[in-house]
Image 1 (cartoon, rainbow, N blue to C red):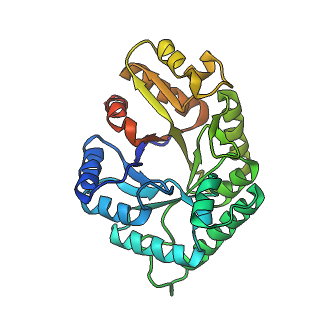
Image 2: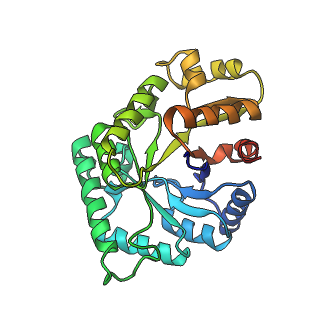
Length: 292
């Protein structure tokens, strides 16, 4: 039995309190299930933004998508997570990743390290968070027990194994990052292989994780192939058909995109889709179509 769809918007743009509150109310009115905040320099600070989002909405959950573990000490992060979970009434979902933008670490005066070192730190962070938040004596205590739902995002084998062991939600970008942090899409076939590998790692779990897909671009209207050709500069690694089939790029009419989303659920098992803030309004009719 397939999970029901969930849809999230990742808020990227800082603003005044009034602007932030208005955006969050709009996201709720448009039907989004989760309001997310990333963890990049130059973008909104995650935890105060999520508390503010929860104060002006009723239905959506709120979450990080995703925290850069390299920015955080596990003990201090546990305090932030527990406090935010309490202040949002138990609506927090915690997303964590290993970090991939070296320039941000340099700007913050923090070591970047090798991919192995970054995943090592993420693994220690996850383990320590589970220990701290699962301790009945931890102060502050999270509202959700034993901890808020955990989302882990990544593409490499170690990240997939880590998600299979710990995550309630396994997140896929449909790409891999170059050394400078630039996203490079992998082919739909390669993505399918990554998901299959993840499934093999989580075999035997009592409850499989929810699978999330990050949608990079939404383009509603016009001929889908013509729109894809406009986007071909996004990466030179894929052909037109691969672009058209890729779950990170959704083009076509509202009905065509809705059908593609259903197809991605069938092919990959994705039921939780995250769109970026610039496409929040454009994607909303697709949500309505899928729930209609």
